[in-house]
Image 1: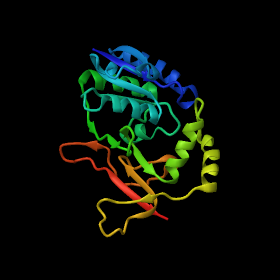
Image 2: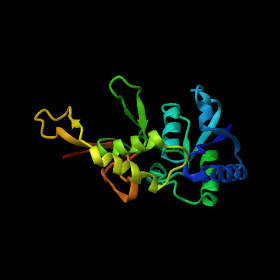
Image 3: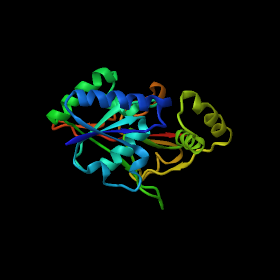
Image 4: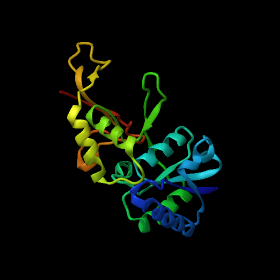
Length: 232
């Protein structure tokens, strides 16, 4: 079987290209056969990552990880992560934090030995829209509006500074959306505010809106998806 480096060249100001080169070499050196596939080339090929690969290695930021994880959901094909984005929240939550020089050999050993663990993948189903997955978190409110504003104008790699203008533009005219909790018949948790559904505790800049969220599963522990609602 082969292993894939899937690279999102829009992530991390070019870090993804260099990281993909390094992890590919490390995996080959560790005894893996590597086929490199770019993320855009997967459009229109829904089963491409399931064609005989022992594992998939996503190289990029959280957007790359989310996209690849959605393609692998329910297939049993393991996913490794090489962080090369701005925040790399999924990589941090799942322990892929070592430098590529150390991560490559360890990942090759894990792939050959078939050492894996199960994690949750969250799904959001917007009314009238397509189902969307998330690995770290999904939100409604100010944070979601800022991210949407940034995505609408994004042209290539971003940094923390890229968020300043969208934050300011959103803050000027922002109004809290109405939130209704289906499991709150008394309406105590419903009203204008922000909602965060988290599969992992950490968020950007060290914030942890759902500190008890745990993305991994084991025989002793069933993974938890935690939600937090902030009324304004």
